[in-house]
Amino acid sequence: INWPPSSPDLNPIENIWRVIKQRLRNRNPHGGWKLEDLKRAILDVWENEISIGLINRFVDTIPQRL
Image (cartoon, rainbow, N blue to C red; front, side, top):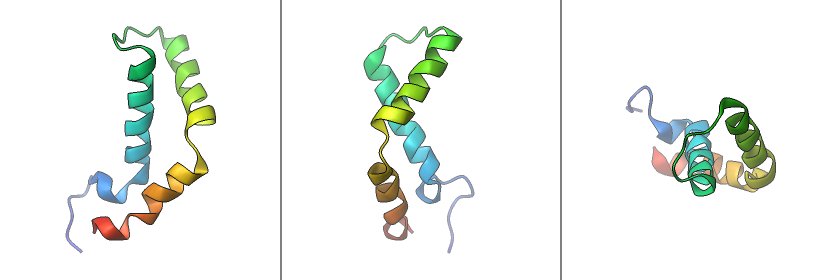
């Protein structure tokens, strides 16, 4: 299998981070987060908006992206 070494296609966490970043932009479109607020927001998104189903979908689609 040939693919770039840092390809997000085989790194589901990269897709999860993309979703987290989008959710954070939706909450604060202009950025400018204070560090502690950003940490809390990331944790809140992770705990309340990232489901095991979403994670499984990214993992399950890896073979299709090869």
